[in-house]
Length: 246
Image (cartoon, rainbow, N blue to C red; front, side, top):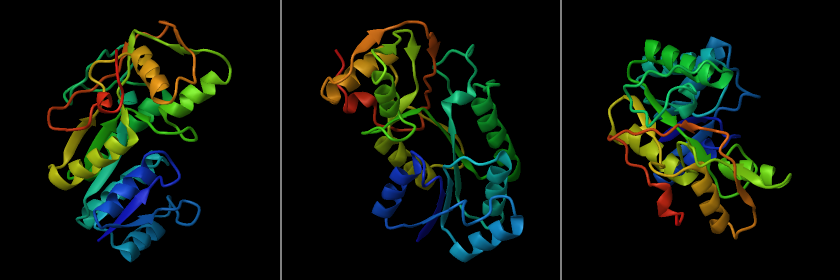
């Protein structure tokens, strides 16, 4: 079995690739420096060459790229998954959000992801769209929460709000959940979030202990938002499985 995965230079895709290999899938990366994301003929030829059993769009790229991948997958009856984000919800939309809540974000990233979702749904009714939260890795070096903490720690105490409830989960748990949704659920929109209870201050404090208490966490309640998501169809390990909260 073969899988075609975009975003292999990013945060989520490499971890998801490990899960796919664990389930006996070969992983072929869509390298945008080699394979066009704008030429329909080249894209179609590449997909036909790889002949994937699964196509997972985890990377960025234009909204038109996402639309093309979704359409080509539908035409070939290839299960297609796109990772969206909790950032599709606007600041004024307070969670926990369920799948019935229509996102309203108009910032660049949130609007981009909303556009991708809309275009994908229009050309591929069998697509899997999974909104994920802020990912928690084990080390810095990618766009994950540990990277954020390390960068802020380099300039002083890390500001953390007790009034901000982020949607988040550990990378490994997200990757396993994406695979499970794609292989066991029916197509549609899903929300994957491992944080149902804790504020960013609590999470940052627990992560500090988890990583040897090497940072200084400072309460700063400037940010007041609730990005949490809930979806009764999705089973994802809660962050409390890895972190101890007081």
